[in-house]
Amino acid sequence: MRLTMLSDDMPFAVLWSPDSHWIAVNHHVGSFMDRLHLFEMVGDKAVERSTLIRAARHVVTRRYPCLTPDAVLPNALRWSKDGHHLVMVTISSLYACSDTAKSGDWWPLWMIGDVRTGKIDVASVRVDKADGPLHEPRDLLYRGF
Image 1: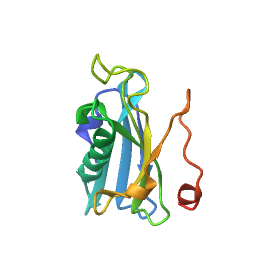
Image 2: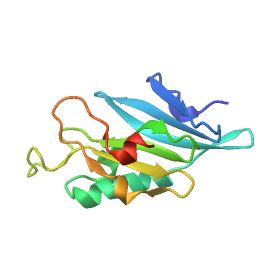
Image 3: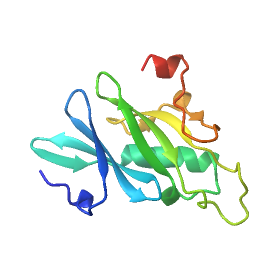
Image 4: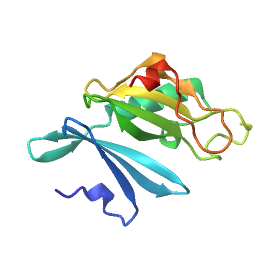
């Protein structure tokens, strides 16, 4: 199987779901940022599904109106044991907001989404205000995931 959108000589990381029905790919786009692609295995073909990615972008742009959907880059971190839910973090370029935006106008958001329905669990959305590396939430929802 060849995924042509990944054939640009840029690195990528593949996360297979535990049930082997889904593939999450963090595809490097430069400047220490990745773009998430989700694929559902249908027979012997990988069919790209973008509903969950659009939902993640919607959550971010509603919270931070200075960001456009194209500026929001969800990244996959890990699958649930059943392979239906995905922990994601959204990032963006430091310069993604308009010239009028100031530092602190947006922060990375952690969230959990259902790949089958394409919906984000709104109770899972967490702001990451840590300076430096991102820190996955450690509350009960994320620890028990």
